[in-house]
Image (tube, rainbow, N blue to C red; front, side, top):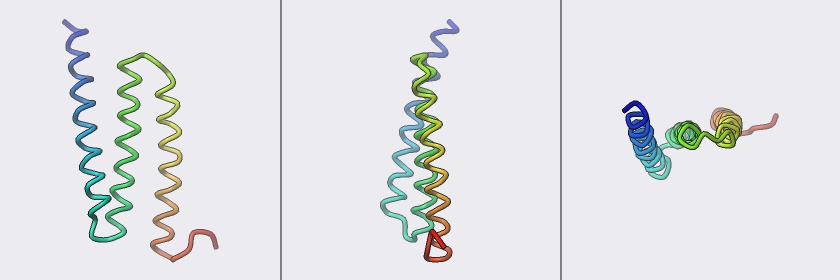
Length: 93
């Protein structure tokens, strides 16, 4: 019973994370301001990294965990660069 409950929980988490990614994509494409789009992009990469972690839990493979770390690192740098660009108009001084 415990394995079946874990399997259903992982499936529900994947479905809800995919729905959250859809909402973030909608906000990124339709955001009224650039700040809304940057925030939606931030939410999108966080949801993608968590979805990869859930796939890793489901399959038992460590490759998904490494990909999630890579996505979070690149996502953080891109969010910081976009925020700096929106504040000052330039990324590199």
